[in-house]
Length: 507
Ligand SMILES: *[C@@H]1O[C@H](CO)[C@@H](O)[C@H](O)[C@H]1NC(C)=O
Ligand SMILES: *[C@@H]1O[C@H](CO)[C@@H](O)[C@H](O)[C@H]1NC(C)=O
Ligand SMILES: *[C@@H]1O[C@H](CO)[C@@H](O)[C@H](O)[C@H]1NC(C)=O
Ligand SMILES: *[C@@H]1O[C@H](CO)[C@@H](O)[C@H](O)[C@H]1NC(C)=O
Ligand SMILES: *[C@@H]1O[C@H](CO)[C@@H](O)[C@H](O)[C@H]1NC(C)=O
Ligand SMILES: *[C@@H]1O[C@H](CO)[C@@H](O)[C@H](O)[C@H]1NC(C)=O
Image (tube, rainbow, N blue to C red; front, side):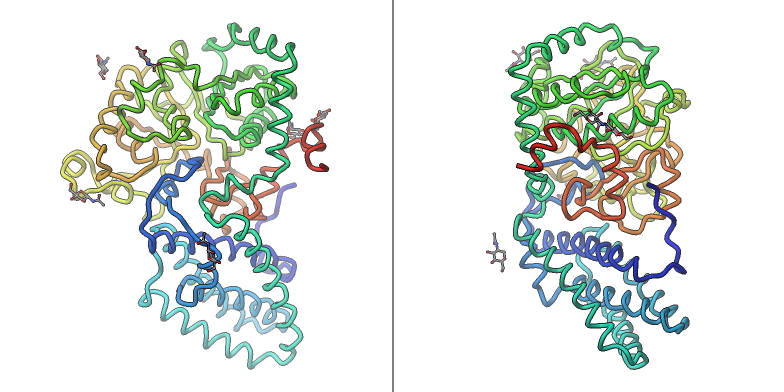
């Protein structure tokens, strides 16, 4: 079900819904960042599923409040954009191409402003937004004047917009803290499924026998196979990752997945992967609580961060210890979807480097100075502020080189340096940038296309050409507010006819 590249000559009305949602998605994101900055409350969210720059944006938000805010420039801009988009449709319908062109160009300017603000995590200022808002106003006025059948068209538009806003408000009301939306708006049916699976696991000895058998499988340590690691507590997320990987593999039986999850989700995860067919791939599920060496002495001491969920996130810095016999692995996040055969990743020349990753500085953002406090001499004396950032989500790790360079020790060192949180705030990416500094090999961008969790305007051709698409950002594909345009890319790898999913959906 591939979507075609956005084509401006298509009847735009059909695209309108997409657009409204897209604008709204972007708008929500901006609003969140805005509010976050206003509150200055920084604390870890319950989830750290994303490993990109959005990690920095922890905070408590009252979305209901913010949507009603009269003073936010982002909101004004977003509202105007909705109108402008509507007028583009109308202008094109009336063959007024010049006006449509003018409107489109203003629309793109606003988009740029909004995404800039979203990326840097600061609200728009009057100086930035003022001129654009003003010029859009006058264009909207012009458009209103030119088009006579406005009363009907606009009435239709406004009822659409209203419906969208009502849906957004309803969603916001369900979860006042947007940061938790990802977790809380997991459909109820998914929680129900997890419960049913856990009880399967407890009641069904054949499942645990199968798991025991797997634990001793030589395939788990066979370096002629292709090994993938996923550390997460999100059943559907992991399932989509594994399923999309095997569905696009030429020889799925040669793939081995190493999942580590937490104690709460361990049983359901086991039951799911043992009772579904993943084309003969080997899938190991481990409980992080049973990794006895990964305990208070190693992690807590270094970090002071007692959040259980960040345990799983920090496990990525211990991969050679988790899998002492393996030589090369690919680390996948739980919010990605694989669209191509991946085994050639394992033969990419890393030139002695430890980490193969896609760089993120092709736009001006995402250089080191964005993540780290360069007013601190510990940072500024060792690192180049213009060094290019890269992304977690899909990383090729050469574990032999890792052990040799002692990357885990580097990680411990930087954890220690940042005890007072003045080098960076939170999140694993800044740590990764430091620990893998000088040890990262840039990969072709098409291996890993990012932003599907916050950017509604990614080029369709780029998405289609991507080996992996990454829903980094707040708008995960499994939440209600996710970006409609991308949702099917994820959903097609979830088997909704599974007995439990069906029962849970109908109960
Ligand atoms: C969020 O804002 C709305 C509207 O101002 C208010 O009714 C609600 O109580 C607020 N929620 C919290 C948790 O502050
Ligand atoms: C943590 O690991 C160390 C070394 O492996 C061990 O000596 C210690 O007893 C462990 N602590 C706990 C709380 O399990
Ligand atoms: C790695 O670092 C640890 C200390 O964190 C040290 O004990 C060990 O010798 C180092 N290994 C190598 C190969 O440098
Ligand atoms: C950045 O580092 C400097 C020097 O150590 C420190 O004074 C400052 O508070 C740090 N900034 C933040 C935001 O932590
Ligand atoms: C895996 O994805 C395929 C589509 O490629 C789908 O038919 C199948 O049901 C999925 N399996 C699971 C377990 O979700
Ligand atoms: C979906 O899961 C059910 C088991 O619950 C299985 O019978 C069915 O074949 C699966 N569908 C696909 C397309 O894999």
